[in-house]
Image 1 (cartoon, rainbow, N blue to C red):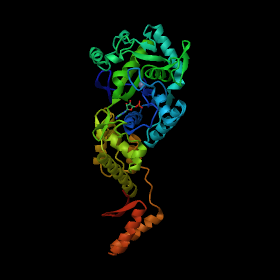
Image 2 (image 1 turned 30 degrees about the vertical axis):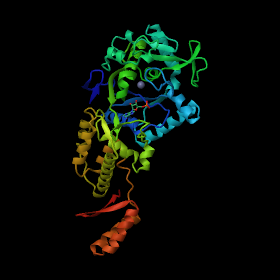
Image 3 (image 1 turned 90 degrees about the vertical axis):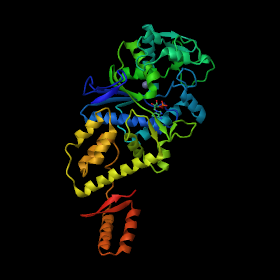
Image 4 (image 1 turned 60 degrees about the horizontal axis):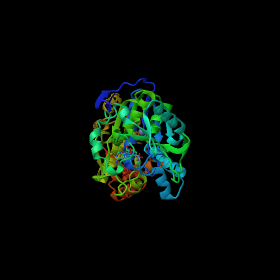
Length: 448
Ligand code: AMP
Ligand code: ZN
């Protein structure tokens, strides 16, 4: 297996520390609103990663966090906590907001047939571990205190800029003067925020004798340490995580434990929607429910995502989603034909697919192999479903009554009684099926 690694900026051979326990951590959602198709793009690609590893014989141990506290509306450690903002918007408590959107996220996660992580970790269940991490950072001389919190001094971590190839001088020059705070360096970040007198922040914990809450970046280092241990084999996220969030995770873990957080860092690119940046104010943030209203199943969207490579910037359009939906239906109908014709297995198919997906997750190449290999068997399609989780084989076979109706249509057609055969065809269609006439007789298919 080969995988792009942000540490080296190269596609590398993947060698896990222990093939029987491949440790993966995925930065999860901030549960303050419904996740949109941009968010799910990343989880679909990590599903491909996990399935490819599992199919290649590795045993995966994967943790996903849920950010239910501390993610501010700005990356610069100011702005409002997103959960508090969600609670105010909806007249609910922060805990209700976290529960509601965590449940909604996990429901959509399952609708996309995404392999369940070994463990899902809400940040608020790891407050003690996060405080211990700050203790260690302070003991090791990496922190300083300001009026609003405890900050990580990035100047103390020599390699801070390497991961994202940050140009710190340019960052400093570009920073808005109005944002000047007590930060010593432009890239310093809060590991703990203090709650001032009178400040409304419902989620609060005592630390060093005063109320506060963790900085957003802290949870991932703390959860990785508690649940997996360093070094992880693979840490995943979106490209937006590279310059701040992941650079910070790496710095914290090194500062606290003196170790490397992960051996491989893999990021997926962003999608645009109809040529625009995905944003709430443009009203182009579709949820899976909104796609369903327009007639697209979650797995049609998954098909669209996997048609592209995780590192390429892609533009989502409904025309392209139509194409993915049609292709998925065509594959399900090929499975339906495999059931009726009893084709022989293609013994090299698994190897061919894994050669593609194992080469830095080249799902588009794997898909073209599937397109080009004719007469795939029932087993072949089941294997394809294991590799991609596209629900291709959960095809409902027609009832006995329907099969009889199909036979009657065939007989009417042979007798050139086209009025009857057309009427029967319409009835069959109303049940969700069509009839395909082949040289060896008719076969049922799923209707569009
Ligand atoms: P959030 O729940 O806001 O923390 O978002 C979770 C993650 O979804 C982000 O950090 C990105 O990695 C990913 N994401 C958000 N928008 C997009 C997009 N348009 N395309 C791909 N990934 C996205
Ligand atoms: Zn993270």
